[in-house]
Image (cartoon, rainbow, N blue to C red):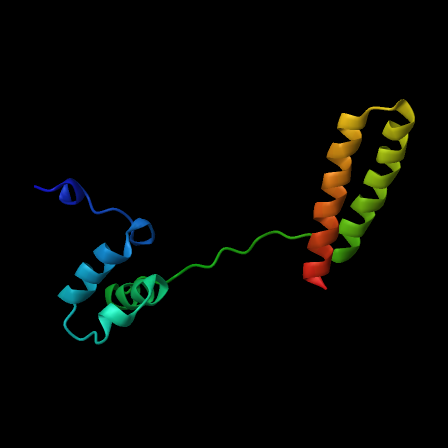
Amino acid sequence: MTKGTEGAEKPLDKMTVKELREIAHAITDLKGIHGMNKQDLLDAVKAHRGIKEEKTKKASRSLRQIKQHIRELKVRKQEIAAEKDPKKSGILRRQISRLKKKTRKMA
């Protein structure tokens, strides 16, 4: 037995392209296996095995909620700046920056 064939088969998502190609080769009706990328191979193998892909929906906040959170963080940052704590101020500055980037992506 080789290292990869011991025990149960690992999940398709965790397999390498090489392993997926071996599985796809076993499926005789697939053409152009070597030209496919990993996502194409995954889709083809899952379709052949009858596995339906479940898309997980991320719980995202609305634009208004994020902007409200930014305003709250700015107020906290001013309070901390008055205390002259540069470490906490820097943390809040980066948080605000990340949230601003998220709002630009959402818009």
